[in-house]
Length: 601
Image (cartoon, rainbow, N blue to C red; front, side, top):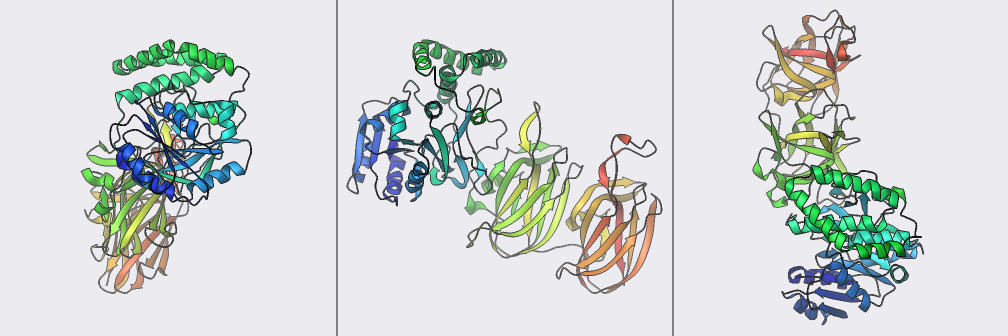
């Protein structure tokens, strides 16, 4: 196991502690110090008292590829595994890496499954891929491990956790140390494939990585990434592909901002200066086949990947029973999958990707989940919402779930009855598909959340519901569109299935309802059930007569308590593009409109 270090005194001790704890019976540790000026070497020397640690020193900082080559010169094993000094391996990491090589002799490289140390539920990378323009990305980056689909083969193994077979190293050769930092692992992965080896991902070989906690993207890093991704393309792309690549580079140069254009020109100049070594590499590999097309993303974007939610670092000790995206500290409860906060029409919200999760802490039992959110402009199949209890014996078991059905409206407010004891919970949002609209919107979006809260009870007025009341939003469960007003009547259209909550302080014997049905022959079934017991108590059908407003009353017997009223339309109506010219245009799917529902003694 080779640990590459540069000024890593603060993290190296923990890294070595984890390596000493490996359950694989046979290993050696090589620490390569790349010209550190802190106490990195002293930390490594102190670790020698605990086990065999070989320390290799570079007199000056020459970059990660050079340090890797120094380590290779001193490593003796048939399998060589690299780990960064801020990489913290699980006890079974090395065992799973070795098992991956044992399973197939054609495997030359193994990629570990690397998590963010600051957010260990989220993947930093599990192998990597590049696009046509040479930009690399770690696969499954910023995705939840529980929901990610880890690939079996990858173009390259991420440097932290990269493992190589000795025979493959002897055939492929050393790392390209003209790359000071970044993309040396990409280049090596391509060379492995071209040499006839596979690079696979070991899903159970886990490492927590301290990468990214500072969130910096310095000018020096941007420059190195620009020049090294160009070098990878120049070394490995076919002649025909190089011509197309050059055309895209020229276009990107013209469109780039002045600062970015200067970086690109410096990167081009560096590659021109190092062109002889590129040509030598191309001659050496002229008969080697390129990697399979399935390992390369077909996009030509001048950055990659596009539209991935940024890394989040939750702060569990700050968690509460609610999240308001307008609050500056809201990101402390976000686990993964959320984009930066935005403000539109006076409302603050965050867009979520197809997988997103948030952390909430209940100091007392909860009886209601309240959501204030907005849908994407098209029907993507809805969003699944599930709640999991953290800290339990099985944290992946769902304790509650529902589905946010897509609706054509700008804002949705929902109040879902549930029963949860006090504790820590993960709320997970999952969409089957995401919505995007390139080039205006390149992100893949599921919905936008303004706020979420777990509340101890339903504090709603007794007696019924009036859509003119400012408190009515607290009684809406789901399926309702925005409030409307016509001829001094306040109402809301409901979709094909809509529900609301009512509270009764006294026994009642009659229900009064003010409603309207769409302009087609379709009735609505009204069912009333006990909120606490979940059993159906009463139902009736609102038969279609016309599209006018009606005031009806029905006899029924209800005792004091809380109830759910469910409205289900037989055939929801819409008229997109005014296909029926005799009726008004309507993109929403409407079941009925409700103005009020009251109960009398």
